[in-house]
Amino acid sequence: STSLMLFTRDLRIHDNPALAAACRADRTVPVFVFDDDLLDGPFAAPNRVRFLLDALTDLRGSLRALGGDLVLRRGDPVAEVGRLAHRTGATELFLADERSAYARRRLSRLREIGPKVTAHPGITVVPPGDLTPSGGDHYRVFTPYWRAWEATRWRPLAATPRTVRLPSGIRAGSLPQLDDLTSSATSRDLAEGGETAGRRRLLHWLEDDAEDYDTVHDDLAADRTSRLSPYLKFGCVSPREAAEAGPAGFRRQLAWRDFHHQVAAAFPDLPRADYRSRGHRWNQDEDALSSWREGMTGIPIVDAGMRQLRQEGFMHNRARLVTASFLTRDLGIDWRHGLRHFNAWLTDGDIADNAGNWQWVAGTGNNTRPGQTMNPLRQASRFDPTGDYVRRHVPELADVDGPRVHRPWTLPTARRHGLDYPPPILDLE
Ligand code: FAD
Image (cartoon, rainbow, N blue to C red; front, side, top):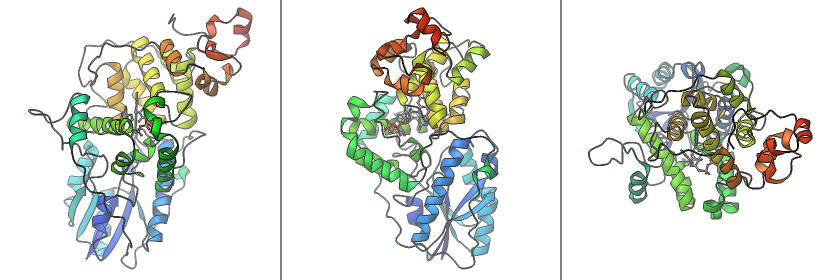
């Protein structure tokens, strides 16, 4: 028998249930399709395309080492998979079960082309819909979800295939160059994509930083969170494996990820519409919005986060909270503008996580205290007490010592004028 394995956002060979099932056939065709619809849309941010190419190069290497290959195509995934099924006589198709509206449409079209289709879990630790409160189709509040999540038994780890046997006569296709897929620039300090890099990061983090995760994860300058998010986004690391290996505080973060995914599955409009409308009237302020995007608000803790985003395609979680709160609460600008900007730069940019978190901060989402605000200056002194995070990301302030760097407006006039840094767009004092 011959099977097809369609990779989507599960670019790994370890603990990949769909791949393990596909490799039980005599012959297996592992395939990835560059989906023209996705490449033309807002989801194809250059940083993520770069990361994706790394991940596919790595996956192809792993499959070749097992005797197989990664077959690459471009176009409509359903049409391409249909063609391959026809050529190889494949009778079964396996892929990861994904619940976005787009993935659900793709799945129902795939079911019409011939081979028997089976979707396996693997994108989250606990699949959306597995846990439901009584009388509802999804959890709206995190704490009860977390309790139920902690109490469930996870699926067993999937075996890594020992060999992958391709049918003969298949053209594997070559990997495109970055320029073939996107015309815009990527961030300068991007993490390397792929399963090998992701597993290495997980191992090093477990050795060096995991133990005191609970006490250091909010320290901006320490920068000691796992930085696994882009690997989880593309499935280079199995969330199930990471959850088992990491400490409880870290597991709780992975449960947040699952939580947002089950909200987005039940409420697919999450990136567009208020989850819970509170009748917000947002300000239209193009100048303020553009200062925020550029990291030129004159509020160092905000600018540091926004500069880190552009430089690395990543931002520390605490800085995401501070910058998002500043945009929506202090400037009163619609969270959808913030979401769009984050989505354009984040290597881990994900519809469910990005929208779920933006709405949480803006007070339109699952926050049980939607009225609560964060003062950026208080956040700065708590989570960047030395000012090192600001000095690292805002070079204009690199010579201002100590926590004074958070309030450049209090420096003596001559010193202040010597800095090539804007005055604050808002008085927070
Ligand atoms: P760690 O602290 O090591 O956490 C481990 C993992 O848990 C992360 O890799 C991530 O997968 C998950 N996680 C942690 N916190 C959250 C959270 N609040 N929500 C969902 N998952 C979480 N995360 C994304 O993966 N993609 C996004 O597009 C995204 N957008 C965000 C937008 C805003 C406004 C905010 C406030 C947060 C956003 N997050 C997003 C969540 C969080 O900031 C990142 O997951 C985290 O900073 C990644 O760093 P890390 O891997 O070192 O995290």
